[in-house]
Length: 354
Image 1: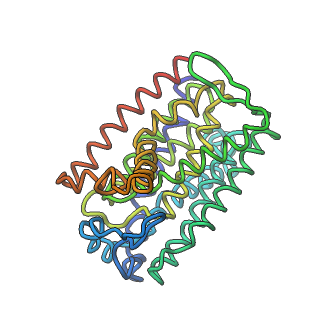
Image 2: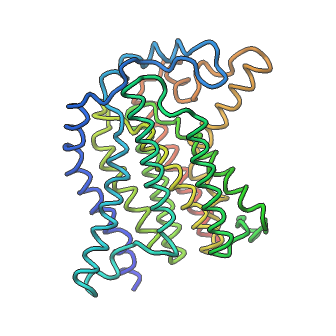
């Protein structure tokens, strides 16, 4: 039975990787045909930044006007296609495939919805960015979407699934009662903010692939096989994306990818928490350490500029700081991968000790 469950979780990973490899050239052809890249490079003025981003523009301006955005379509699109393909096979052939599909009301409806919603809203942002080069959807509208979805998801956990606490390693469940919903919103917003880690060829794709594999392991240990299969499918899709994103990148993950992945990751972490008798949220800053560090570094950069009128890092997000110090982009990317793998194993070990 254990080996059968392992196959149920791992086969979707292989299928998603294969499907992604097949679909990627078609997506790339479309994106290059319609020149789906920014028409003007650089970031301009960011949130809380009146000086512009001259150093970032110097390092990245040319790359942004020749490589397509919207590569994240491959990730969430492949995951959705594989999920419904396996469901269709189960409906068509019955017992032979009935236990292989992972569309499950209790475990994967919400993560799949998060992935799809983030992908579609992020795609709208990317399309506007490509057409106008004016920053896409206003940040306030994207934050509104994330907040409303997180509020709904938090309510779903609280009212429908009976979850109102968060697991802590070696301590147990800590009751939050109604505060569970705002806590869910806070975690989701923080994860969404970490999406800015998408900035170097292969960086975000590799990091998210390793994170979702770690959560596949946690879910499998909790006997949440459908959730484990979902995480493995996302990871398989990300590895297919990574195949084409290793320098030089064929396309970028961009908002349609990062928004889909961060929303899905938030729901996944909570699903692997008290609901599965684990500590999925508490180990999130460990497993997703590069994402956590990115958000913290950005906050510190803004505070330093506001309070002390000087930058703490040469560029934020912090991975660009290492570039500015002279590290080649590929070295930054691979070192982030190493850190993510080590952090993921550490977080997984803590989760499995419960």
